[in-house]
Length: 434
Image 1 (tube, one colour):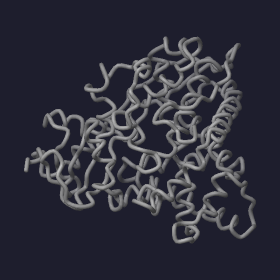
Image 2: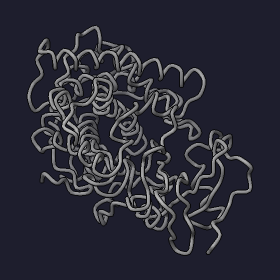
Image 3: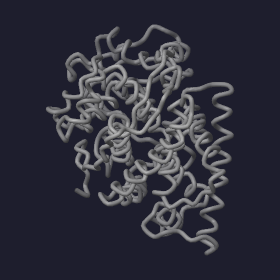
Image 4: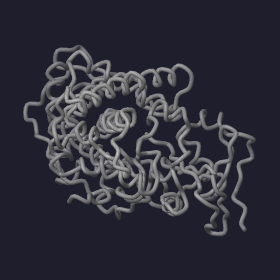
């Protein structure tokens, strides 16, 4: 057997918190290896990077998700009992519920809702001296997500709901007050959706057939039983919360347009595929998910390395998206690189890799792509604004991260000749409904 390269530190937890997104990529370079091991929070962890490492990580014969997510993530970001924690037939059956909502017609309806709500907010932004884009976009996406999912809401509830969902997202890399805030936000959100699901099942609230609220409320597991109220609520939030999280990417789109003005011109007058190239390059370059975790199912060997049952295994998501072996000049912003991308499910994994139906690749990836294409076109063609001097630095030690200022814009006005966003089928890992 070949010994897996080992980090010298007794425990690397504090280093991870200090280094953030650079933590795993730096160690891959230090060890000159796509496989290495360390201790995190006192536990041995094997780390995988590179396209081949990603392909191994998504081999379900060798890895499972049960027991991989820390409790602190389940009590804030993910929720307990959700699809991300399942394996094998149970996972595929629950995943099919989510995939059934991702039809072309549904995706088109969703992107239309995003555009409509964006334009409604644009009318308000025109009346303000300045706008911090990030919280505003979160509200836009929260409205669109609820309407798309068939979740009723009162006007007064949108801002606090968007803030709670944002706190749950922000908590995944936080400690202390950030984590506590996210945990309380999840409690409130789960009570809200739990009561809604109980009312639907009791006939006290109407749910539109074909929408997520109806589908999740009446979904039956392999044993024929309805999901518990708690788990059904977790899964409903697992549709709405990630849509609000796309606000991070949208702000990075605004930053990319500010730093690369040529891209705005290309969005207005470039090839029809350019909005998707631009979207994919933002997802590749800018940071969001640093890593993913799984556990070894049973002892196995790979390239002479021995993996022991139960070992925590981490996948270097950020590093793979910046791997110079697959991406020429990986730290430069070049949307056109996606013109010739080979479509590999393992060298571009901002929302996981592998197959949608069988692996743990995010079911909402197409929603993310449609949101970002719509937002990119709206930013470039439907509105004009000034970007005042501000702190646009991105702290790579904070997870998740953003431009420090949240991206402030001033003198917002509707563009004289707006171009309507057009929803097109995403090319990333071909949708089974296309």
